[in-house]
Image (cartoon, rainbow, N blue to C red; front, side):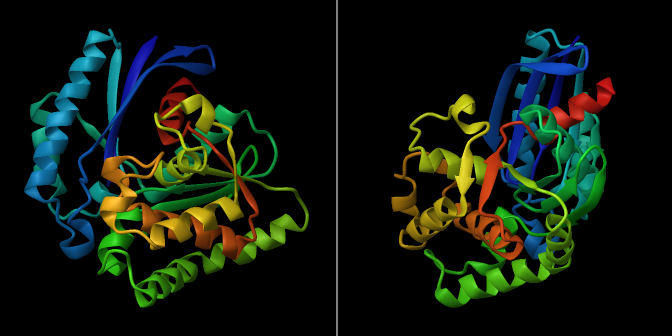
Length: 304
């Protein structure tokens, strides 16, 4: 069966069309558009009109594309922006007008599906830590066949940019404030992670636009290549290197960097800061980047 899933994220809206084959999926088509749906959440917990209109336009295009590809089903889910928006019901009504319903995932559901999708895509079986840095939230999930520890934190590339980065590039004071806030959020997880790491080898896996972008930048990819991203081993030194480069450049110069998309350049520094802080606090020297994530997880749960 051919199915489509659409992810309404805080930074971007994504489409995955895949064939469900037994207990696995085969990707047929992927697309992404930056609509910044979560732009107003950090300030007033409201979806702004421009973001909603842009998201609805892309959603209609994605629905039509899925129909053209003869999908038997089209499902849509939303994450942190729609969890928190006080005016989400008005937006959901407008989505319904174009013939779609939105499944708003809880933080725990989001974490589980990211974990499921990443592990399946990389064919991992041992103890795994998956961290998913989104636009509005970050999920940390530790487990094997079952999840042992799962947390969803209200920190992400869009949210942290709006909350802490008042200048471009950000000031040292802003950087320290964002690092402290990130470290405070994950302090509880770090203790648990360190205890588990004493008894088991843990493979760290990174999903989401921040981690795939760092991988693309390190490899200097002029065009995004999922085959070169998926499974790429990203060292802490790589993350530190990219962070150092980003801190020295204004937005216009960032947009010239190889591997960094035009629409992510204004939020990438905050995303990399979160990745760097997570790796530092948990003592992670290397992370395996996964191009499969919550979207694949969402489709796979339909099979199982």
